[in-house]
Image 1: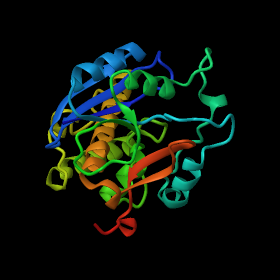
Image 2: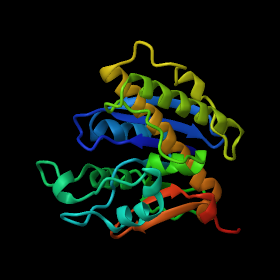
Image 3: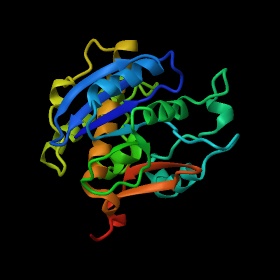
Image 4: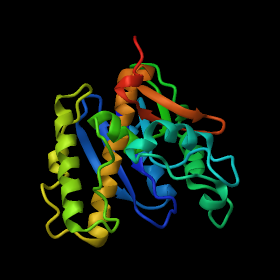
Length: 251
């Protein structure tokens, strides 16, 4: 069983972070990918003909021309208080010059490889699935955060960036003792960001986000609906995430 995370760039000319876990939570590989063909080739090589679940941080179904999907509104009602709401997704914002949306193209390409687009997982099922995930609310739930970690280089200043990175690294390393575990993060994430700036820093962030996407896929496969939640619907667009302990279900 393989769990593949894709921090999918909304435009194909930007790098996409990728990561692969096995069912023991071991990080097997991380990569930076290019266009659609590169992403599909990577998935094909990593998944082979076996069972695999792909967690993608990007809108995979966007029927609405403007505004936001019901998924963003529903997720916001639960996670906005943690600063973990999702950006509005609509076709006017996401469409490329040819009128297509990259996430939707990816779903079509993965279908040709035998992947079914459906976030409703049966625990432990040997399936080939692709589903939309979102790292920020996932981290809030998994780490018990009061607000999202500021680990991305978005103008908050270097000290805050370093602190956010250190906190994220600490939380991800602690998942080695969780169920399911996550192993091998220390080899990817340096203790400090010394010397990392610009594109080098962004590339590292993208690969770490991909690890989180892959872990969410593993977590959903392990716990199913008992500890994950699908906001929205397959038809109108959705986001799957580990949910807050207060929203866990029995059995």
